[in-house]
Image (cartoon, rainbow, N blue to C red):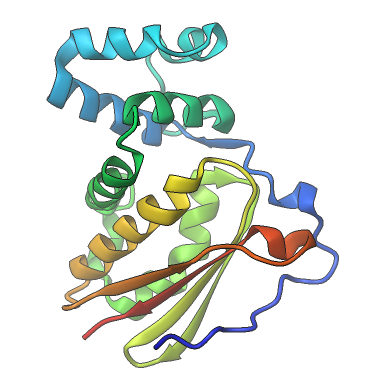
Length: 203
């Protein structure tokens, strides 16, 4: 049984501070690579045909790894890709993204990668990939931690399946076994209505 942690959002933080406005181009690059690998070039063109004109114009050209892209348009592209399979594909994408991010742009982390090092660096990692929102980590024990994210934006399956998939794979890469991630959806009012909780256990 996971205990509910009462970690609170810092005083003075408003809902406008929690809006994810942009994300790194690497996340879109990863999605494009998945599409090309599983559906080919024709699949990528088909995906672009299903989104709005602003989304199509933005992603019909190459996106740089460090480039900031509109998070709303990126979410639209992701949902078009999932096409009714969001839960399964978001989790798979999260796991693949962890492997890519921890071996390419953030490959330096592998030299020091341990559960405590990874968890301690998650807030900085999150800020590198997203503009807006807030992430905090609480170490609840040697093999237990709680992750708190206050965020507005993206899409429900990202928080419900994508983030747990990423966390599970990243923790396995640190050498952990039997990693479990329990997601607790937001509840409450004000900023607490956007408070995502993740309870992690491992061996």
